[in-house]
Image (cartoon, rainbow, N blue to C red; front, side, top):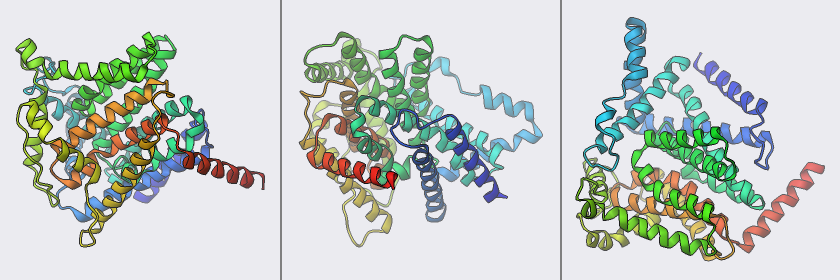
Length: 429
């Protein structure tokens, strides 16, 4: 019955993508688009299988058991169940300050609650089978990633293959952003924000603005801290697109630097509870409490700029070079190390060919500054190598497309031309 349900739902959503022409404005056929969706589902199933087999205690099992417990009330207390499911979001009126370290616990718990409630909803249709749930989660995840790709493609269609690879096909992105984790929610929410921000800059339709704010709320409900990281570069992206300065990159760099200085100085300027350094330290302390196999001896941060500057090389090392390839490591860490070197290869090759003066679209500046800032935040706060690989995956799918959009790599251009020529020959035969 479970296999039957899995096949039915997979066929149903694939048919939905086919009927509603999901391949429109992608430069690819519907077969390829559906194929990527199916690949994500299979990657999500592999993720679930490995977690079920390797770990006695894991996030997926915790959320699934919590969802089943909540769902058990549906048959005995249906009115109570729907009341809790629809209206129990905690006391939001007393936690409106998303910059406060006191309220940060509430917003983190809210993200967990959203994740659990969606799993409850999935369990109703899947009869409690987690592998079938993977399909429901990946419909949302795939949709957001596709919107991110469509936005990049609309700006530079000649680089569609590179955008496609860096958004969908990087192994860590495919594995972690297809599993039943909140990483997929984050990437999907950011994809929606990018798409509707770009649409708002081109169109003044009321519906576009509505979906834009819904996308921001989507990210707030997924991981609120990433919304805090996103707002400064997003505001600059919108402002530069509106005012159109001559030197866009210089304007973006100076504006972002000034905004960061302002935000990190709010504690002293306003004499309030807005202390972003303390929020970062609080996040690090939370991860220190979670003991893992691959601890990297991350140095503890202090609430001052000197501490962050001192630990900058360590954060950079963790986010770009870890995990290190060692034959004696478990196979999962060897695969993670290979993925790290693959991502580093793309960063180095693309970074060496970045042409800021030629690139005029601010979207790629936004993706670059936002993704690299969060990269550093992850490098500072996460002491466990396994968790680090997972948490940075969704931002790899932002950083690499940004570098693709900002660079011109001759060897990649020749490779893309060769692939296109081979594709045309195959099509004609």
